[in-house]
Length: 353
Ligand SMILES: Nc1ncnc2c1ncn2[C@@H]1O[C@H](COP(=O)(O)OP(=O)(O)O)[C@@H](O)[C@H]1O
Ligand SMILES: [Mg+2]
Image 1 (spheres, helix red, strand yellow):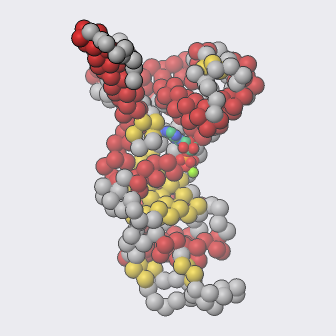
Image 2 (image 1 turned 30 degrees about the horizontal axis):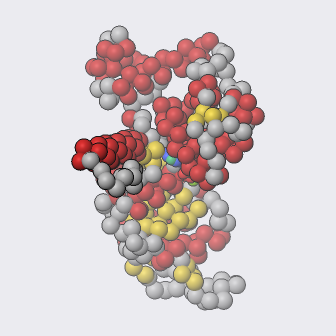
């Protein structure tokens, strides 16, 4: 009840009240509309990002979710590989079926085989019972093979067989089992280089790399930082039960110019700590300095080295111009005030696709 009507009321009084209520409703609708529009714009599937390259990642994830194709997600640690894998599974028709994660690097080599394919009783010393492997557990759903680049050659061969024939044998068993799983693999290594070096099986690489998704490091898409920060502030303020309205502009600038070798994971940790430690609703520079971030050089510059900075400025300008033009080179060159030929030179120089 917005307004309380006195019993003997005039008709125009009623009209005013109704009017006010309608206006209130209109503003509310508009407000939620604005909020959802922002979420829509920069938060798809819980994947936050406004850069052209993240929008591409999201679009590919969206399309591939509908298929059962094998996906290979590459990117540095903390870029969001697992998050994208989950998004794909939970938007696939198999979302009600299991998503099973195996971290190939965390499991000792000798155990990984039985972990993946299971074993029968007596298959090796200590195998007291039959054990189902992750592939069998993921049947009908998705198996997420994280850190696939650490997998040993013998297992690579076995995995290749599952991908080719959709069947495998548990350790110590003669009988093959059929499986129907989608495989999503992830790695922070350069698998192609590993193939060249003879450390990763070429056939397996091609079987995995059906739909490649590369997530660029955060320092190559700094325009995502403000939306990510906003997202994490909201998330962690809510979790901490604290009221945090945002960050002082110079704090945001410091975050935006930091290097983030740990990518989004590192940024999230930093924001979480800032939210928890901040004594004020607006996070000030003291808290972030406490976290060792604003040790970053002058805001907006990556270092104090002139050559490095000029190089960075070139690369950033090209990237932003491309982002702005939606990848259309002619428009990007025009915005930059250079010829298309010159743009091609900078693209090659900085290895931008
Ligand atoms: N685009 C993003 N939007 C929101 N959160 C993200 C994004 N990218 C990464 N994160 C968060 O950062 C952390 C690290 O992501 P994760 O998927 O585990 O990275 P990786 O597997 O590449 O190491 C997770 O907490 C994840 O929720
Ligand atoms: Mg990971």
